[in-house]
Amino acid sequence: MSIMNLRQASVLVVDDDKDILTAVRFLLKPEVKTITTEPNPENLRTILAKNKYDIILLDMNFNSSINTGNEGLYWLRQIKLYNTAVQVIMITAYADIDLAVKCLKEGAADFLVKPWHNSQLLQTLIEVLEKQTSSEKNQVNDKAKKQPVEIIGESEVMKQLFYKLEKIAPTDANVLILGENGTGKDLVAQSIYQLSLRKNAPYIKVDVGALTDTLFESELFGHKKGAFTDAREDRTGLIEAANAGTLFLDEIGNISLQQQAKLLAVLQNRQVTRLGTNTPIPVDIRLITATNVPLVELANENIFRKDLIYRINTVEITTPPLRERGNDILLLAVYFLGIYTKKYMKPEFKLSELAKTKLMQYNYPGNVRELQYAIERAVIMADSNILKAEDIVFSPIEHKTHGAQILPVNNLEELERSAIMNVVEKYQGNISKAAKELGLTRGALYRRLKKYEI
Image (cartoon, rainbow, N blue to C red; front, side, top):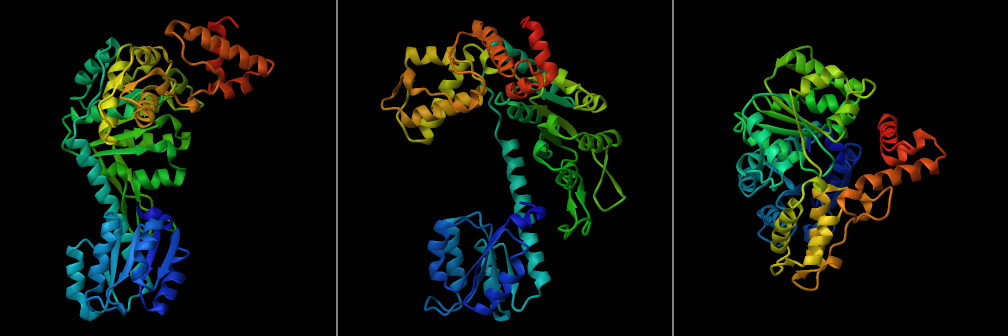
């Protein structure tokens, strides 16, 4: 969570002084997502069992018979038993400072001394959330560094992919990863990072397609205190945080033309300027981007700037769809079986021959991700340790334009042709409406109409 997301935080205040509870509730109500107050710490177990909080403000002393003077430490330990990740800020009087320090050693995030100024309370909340963000980022970076990425595959298309990775990764070339949803673009990006010369430097991943224009600038470029309403302190942007390391921008094909122009300026000048300042900061990053938009469609100037494509696309890698990977389907199925039998503490599973046939004949519109979920469901629901064909159920959410999905691969083109004809007829030749339902651009639909001579 970042300081931009203070308004999304859920806060619980536990104090037997009802005047303090009222004051804090009025102060925080417009600043956070939810504010809950509780005078009796004995109710903590029930409250924490029903609700999840980002921050808990906990008094050090209550009118109870449990080790007067150490109640805060006791309840801190109880809270951490329920949720080790929640950030606890201790509320203390001057005489309790030594005990407050002891609480910090037990896992408290910070402490506030009574009486406090409202600005001090807000600043403490912001700082605790910011520390949590940094900790989570470091955990992600450490995980990316320490755990080698395992990409399963022995098919020819995957061997070509591995060959490209070995050639590209040790360089500093910017990489554009293309491929359908669920094909493993994220894994490929991590693999490039781990095989690169920057593997001991930061690895920052950003889903830029999910950022609004305001968040795009604040998250990527950073900001100075006062740059906008909620900018209560200086903040380092993610591009700057990735300095000397690798920046992975996922869903790059979904950013607006305005966002593209700002990103292009950073890549061209190799410097970033925080919001609210005029001071450029030099940055040295290795850029990896990914999109599910085909390169031909991405090159449409109405959708994406060609000069930006050239900047991000020194080398391109395409992750193949699962339907083109042959026996990799069964390799992956066995791999996921191993994961989920362990996760759900089930006996070892085997695939029946009919189950293997069903897996091999399916089209996989959701690719590896869909196979993974199908195997997980089968492990949970199966009545025996031999998975039968009927145990494998594919998700209906991937089937938008047609019904039957289990077809031999050589019928795929006929299936696509039939689906296009049905939708075009449905809209009486209205290409715009047909393209929208099929999830295609008008240009892509025209190319398919020409291909299938419709």
